[in-house]
Image 1 (cartoon, rainbow, N blue to C red):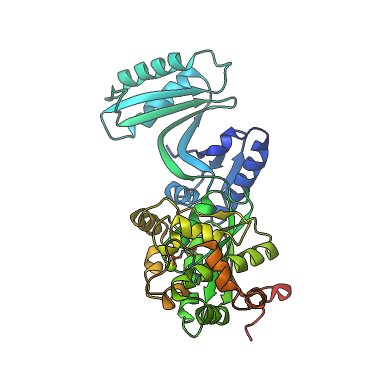
Image 2 (image 1 turned 180 degrees about the vertical axis):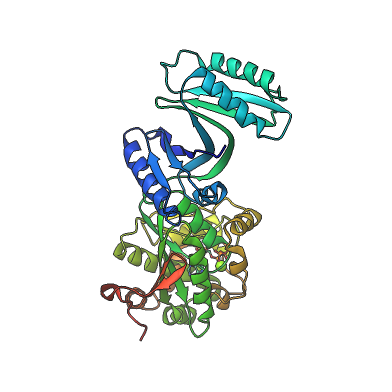
Length: 402
Ligand code: ATP
Ligand code: MG
């Protein structure tokens, strides 16, 4: 008995009323795309579930791929039966006999209200029949095997195996966000959490050559190749930050350097976000982790922009962040040694409670606006598609640093 199909249970989108059709269509497109290496698979999406018909494919590889698709709550391996009670009973016994364990429980859902038995009656009938025809006994609290039966208009679906999906929203439903990517542990995880929420990402990195090396860019590309699992094409914009950073260190008192530097980062990010049609900017900041991530620091830094600044990691401990980085596979890349523009110019005693008027005072001491504009104009962009770097199409060719 081979599994007939996979039943895909939608995530939070089940609650989204009128927008449901849009969500379902987007998710179906994303699923088809994710399964493109299985050309024989057929995906059907209905209002409540999507189905993938299996033929010769290895169910576990298909499920593993589906577990990376955001917007999926869970995936069940299902066997399809017609709605004749005797047929369902025989199917149930056949299915249960293949399982290991001693105890079972039948769970019935009945979307087809015209089915002549209630969910409870059907559960009892199937339970009794399986008790008589298998060695299993019933345990309704901690069963070894859950036998799920879903009676729908077109058929009854039986299943003993359910796999958790990524949750979240289908990618593409929630616009695009410009993510500040540093090469550390937190920002790639922040990017992943945005993707899981259905938000497409584009990345911005501030490089300070010759103080930072090109190896950092390779590292970022490797991180994005991993994130390509969730978004097939990701653009990385590298900002030549050295000139502005040197100007900051020449004009600003040391304890304020990081605050001013981050205010400049936000200004540049906002400028680029508008150019690239992003609706928000995001960082991997976590409240209190370092001096620039205290709430007073965030007030002083955030003051330069009206753009929404998403901070998916804001309440996470470092250990939570590391666990997620390990799960998605960015951790070994993130811990490769690298120089970040923040750490190279790190002041000995950065301000943990910077004041906006002091920031404005330091910024009045030098003409930073043209330097910010130059940073935006001279961004160098790279495109990562399906785990490989691609050359930009002619019209988008990156402007090389002079
Ligand atoms: P991460 O592990 O993400 O580097 P962190 O704990 O090291 O975070 P910071 O170095 O203070 O913290 O950076 C906070 C956030 O600022 C990062 O998560 C990232 O979003 C952004 N950031 C820092 N440095 C850069 C950079 N050079 N380019 C782009 N973004 C940066
Ligand atoms: Mg960092």
